[in-house]
Length: 335
Image (cartoon, rainbow, N blue to C red; front, side, top):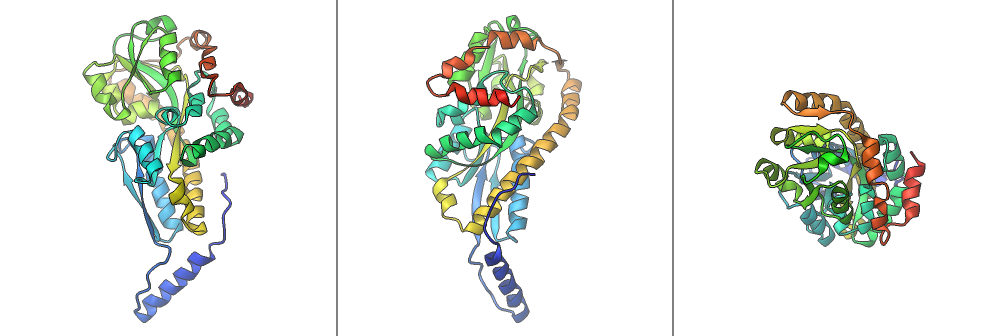
């Protein structure tokens, strides 16, 4: 488990002693370190974001002895992912979890590196990059644009679904309207495969599929399951074209204003949640695929990934103005 360095917890311990004494003597002693903040996300109550948010809340409140309270606002209650990110940057939302390669590149273009197809070959490679030098470099990019990244949680490897036909080769993508995240790399990716990229907010995707505004979408198995996209799609192709991380963003000014003890608690909880959530999601995938299959979705487990990779092998070059090739090579070196 990754560790986060921090300061002594002596201040919190003293407060606990004072609180205990107050109970004995029947006195009321307010906590000088009491804190309450909002955690917003756009996922359902079964989504990866919510799995992480609930565990994070549990850890923060336990570690602080109840002196820090986390209020979770799921299901886009405080807006779309773009609006949540803007809220964090403005300070109206303290913390959010959003797709690092999805809405975030609209603010931090460098995050598009996570949208380079077939760059990540395994979870282990993704974790090594995000928890190491690559993640630290991307964190600096986020901080320069007004975000303090607390941790990288998991969304998962993305796959294609659609309601028209099975997708085994790039030729099967021709003229399919595919919902994409709103960034240059995603638009070019679908176009390169012969599809029609169509940006739609995550919170509106289910209805867009149901009403056939788009033919398909691409998301991790856990998202397809938790958001119930399998109810309105017929085919799932497990090509695992990109790995999606969730950036857990805090407002920098708000975070800097916390006590050292509070900062330590929040950072430790975010890191520990990352370990827990990643393992939980990996363990659940087989069961989720079984539910999707039983719902009538045809699952193609062995699409021609080599053909997809060949068709998009130089796609990263469209990011040459914002992503140094050296960063891509660092990720590849960890495969």
